[in-house]
Length: 50
Image (cartoon, rainbow, N blue to C red; front, side, top):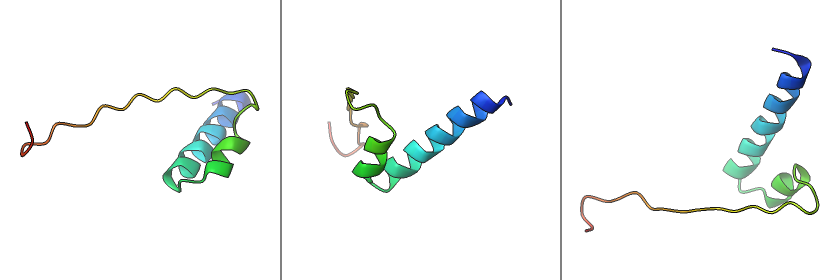
């Protein structure tokens, strides 16, 4: 793994940890000031709900 790849992997790991902890400041610290996040949510089907 190159040093650039390690750097990207570290940023990704920090992002995932921040999301898991619901750490908005941590996520923001990893983002550019003008970043835009688009999130699509589709719930998983439940066997007890049509």
